[in-house]
Length: 104
Image (cartoon, rainbow, N blue to C red; front, top):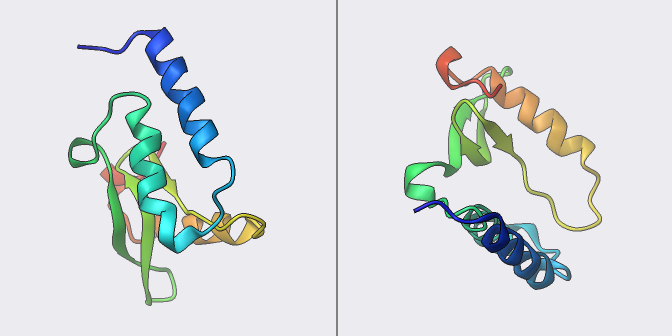
């Protein structure tokens, strides 16, 4: 059963309050994304994966922090870290995805 907008708003408010002081990428990234998508009633087994291995443009291996095929690539960074690096990483991972998986 779809969630009402009121339920989504209440879940989003709780999520924001729970995560307002978080800042450690490695220890919290997967829990963060599970709880974020939980706001909308989405479960990872049906939507997204963690640490998806891809071949980067330079031939090395990369790992997408959170990947939802066709929709998004998310690179999680610790609080206070520059996001430019996450952006470059995400763009580098596009090379290793099949055309049908490319985010919009």
